[in-house]
Length: 330
Ligand code: AHN
Ligand code: ZN
Image (cartoon, rainbow, N blue to C red):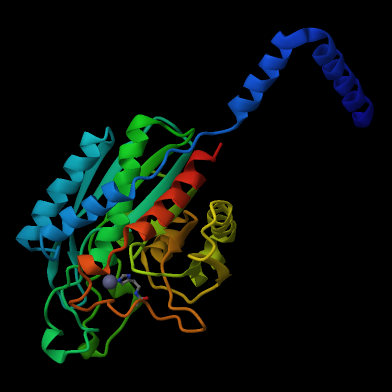
């Protein structure tokens, strides 16, 4: 029955095409163009500037002046690029009892659209370079050019692109605070819940009551010199199909040297709590050294995580891949 209909339909199409002359042919070409989505070109220099602007504030450690100033800058940027901005202020208690004046910053595009994608990055930086080779630096705050600012820089460039051309779905750019206040390594008390305080809060109290998204993508340390992004363990467990979608998009763009299509390690990162608490399937794009070494880059949580640690080409690869995914979603 179905086959019969199909053959009829094909017959009618052929007949129409054969008799329609050039006008019909042009119409067919136009129809073909309509189904091809145009994906904007990510501008790496622009993203690099957004990373630098954050780093220029100094370490964005919660309760510091630089943190307040950078938060204002980020909210202003999202506003400037046409997002509906929500500031979610919260007093969060750190592992050592410190009260953190935290601020999640959310920029919504097409807020009325019920089909949504959430893009995440953390914007705070770690209070201590406790992974630095030199113990004298272990209580100095980090600049967090890669660890923090890179993901936010990519998302600000995406915000700028969104203002010019909207994809079919509504996009939420969610800048999370207090990710990196996990226990100082010298304390010898490491618990998952000490990290990612901003995302834990947002997952319990979303900026829009009952908030949901089709899926989420977290960007963490996406600006390094020569990173390899393996499929992260918890992402694969909670959102296997989203990992597939992203690594396929990267492959299509010729980025398989960066997006290595193999399993990597696990990261106790914001996506874990978004998956567990909010139930939004969310992946983490985060680099691992590779070759069964699931450590992060050598400058991670050191005083060397500065602008020299940032490569615009890496921002390009990640930014273009995310654009490819979000503009192809129907
Ligand atoms: C760990 O897996 C210990 N940390 C990943 C979360 C993180 C810290 N990302 C950046 N800084
Ligand atoms: Zn960190």
